Image (cartoon, rainbow, N blue to C red; front, side, top):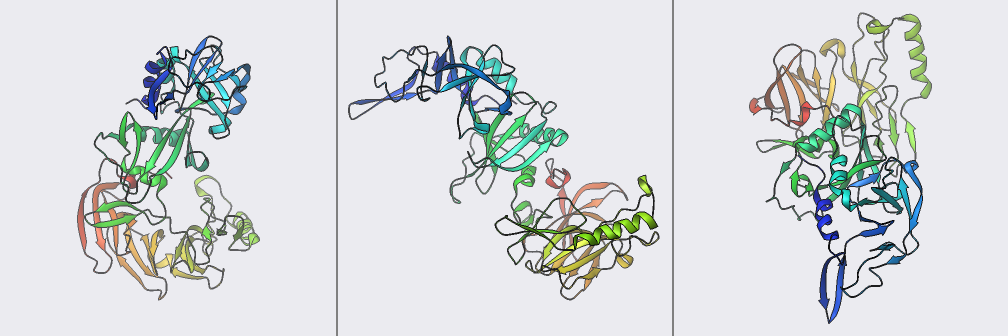
Length: 459
């Protein structure tokens, strides 16, 4: 499947027309000319590129010329023949730069404050097919994949590198071409995201992905529907990412908003819990900064070790907002880390202001528990032996369900849990199950689909 085709090849035929026009219209007796974004310089005809971007501004070389005449603002008859120094939309005097790595000047650049990294690229029309092929991203060569929100703001949402970037590209290539798909408009204009794929060259590939509130999709000749697991990259907190029957399951590990308006920072740290202010301008640590360091030093002195035998302190991992954001649940071994025989994890609960910390799941009784998600005062975790722990953090009650499964997601209403049955003690199976936490009833939900999002581990 080719990722780069759309306007590039289509523009080639248009540019070969003598008048360099893509069309003319007459309104009230006046001819309106629809110009292609062209540039003529040093005997070469160029077309502006939408899918090629400058990945590193340091790779922009020296000046090779300037625009002498802006055609769109000054030409109003279809008989005009373009000449050296003409450009459709670039202002007179615009400086044109060479791009390092392209000594044949098949790509050139101009400054553009609204373009990615501040430069817009133009490609030699004679080499347009060759250049399009060279831009087609091969997952084995992509060094990074960046995702931005919007068209020109370039607010970075995520950056994937190495194997994770390759996985992202392979997912794009598995998109389903759907000529008959019509984007939904009930939620307003689709939300746009920009991807930039970098192979280490001066020029990378870019495109836009869209969310119409129902499906994620993008354009390449026809509309292409992204595989279901793409929801994992962009899903907003509490958004449905999988449906079994009529039960909607939400993205786990995303219940981060507190009643104070703050948000739990996801930084992978297990030595504290960082809360970010509503406007993102400030942060605060929930625990004293030196508490972790003091205990870590004790662990190093009293339980020395290395490799697999090394004792590791996890003060607060997988923090999850509960009780409508009034409190935070988290996993911790801080109370047992110095006990070589009993170094299990407990699940703790603490108020958003840092007060009232207590243990709600005792690891000595239930084994090391892994937090899944929460809804209201309900907290769900996976316990020892692949069991399910249904915890009421207000009352402290814990109900244990023997499911022998790997927990994947909690339903939007907090009543059901989606899980995969285990084939052995260490191997997750391919059969889906749903358990009703109110009744304890389990029901089969079929086989995991090919693009099952909880079997990917993207983030």
